[in-house]
Length: 251
Length: 221
Image (tube, rainbow over all chains, first blue to last red; front, top):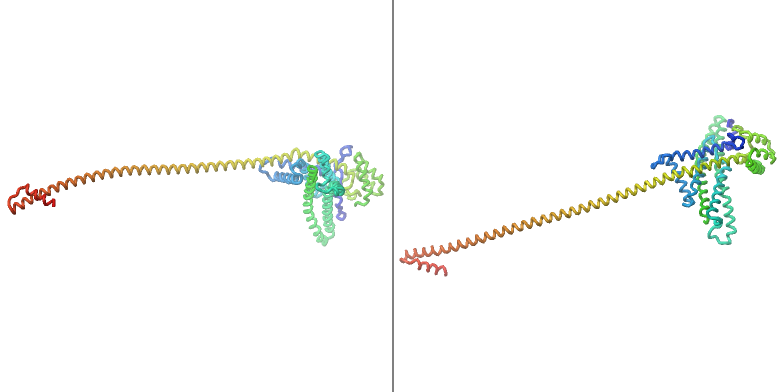
């Protein structure tokens, strides 16, 4: 960062240990720090804003209630009233991804969701819940998920493998979508910001030329905020739709 | 940044198992894969010591694919997400749900109270109007009664007065008739006197009885 000509857009994703817990080999990295910050912020916000339990809400409480109703309507719409038992789970997912994405927008902050292992772990968690609950609730009937109703028997040998593959690709698409969006957005932002610095160091004409990437960087920042929100929403919506399969496997 | 893809994936896979076993296995396995990389030694050092920012080219591994960090990330993610889930499902969401429920109940209660009040008002208005109508009818009945009683009173008095008048009229007529009869009787007497006087003047003496007979004879004709 010190040398303007060597702005490294990848550096922002580097994970480094802040401290190591004794000789256990468990280390607390910047990623861990921002996970803790994310979770702490969510919990603190929701608990503090609703501490008054006001009948007529103030702004903070109204925001928390809106988040609650937004996710509640999402889950109810996708998975029905029976799917509401997964509401805390989807709400946690949504809030975690949303706040982690937003934290990533702050300069020098680490983006937890820009690491594939985190998004993949969250996606696998959804899948494990879907499969676990599906079999626990419906037993073998859960496999009807792969046999669409109303399809003639001779097509099934083709349809069933497709359904299975599409089911298995869900965690991949779910995790790669979020990871890719966050990663690409942050790299693009850094590259354009790097242009500003590089051009700005080239004298007067360079400063003039730097205006263009600066405008781009500002516009991209706005876009990235939108992407952060949309990706959190998409993640939560898809999670509710997959959970719907666990609740109602025969579609 | 990411060049030796297959070699790296090997590192990734092995490093994950190494990490699961704990300790600093990944660096050793990097060497076992035998990636001909001049930075390997550097990398070893970096994983051994905690490295702050500064040198951007600390590793040839693209950070999101650096499997040496996966174990710790997963561990902390599990801790954080579990904490978040517990706080959300046990505290925050029930509280917000309770607030919304309470508000809904309050609104419904208020609406019900408003409805009750309106029904009460409607009943009061109906009662008032009924009372008004009753009072009006009563007033009318009273007016009617008063009117009839006054009329009866007037009629009675008029009848009495008329009766009185009629009696007085009759008396008067009777008196007039008597007076007339008396007067008529007096006329005969006067006529007889006059006749007697006249005849006495003209022809001589005439008795009173003869004069009367003559008068009555004339008045009969």
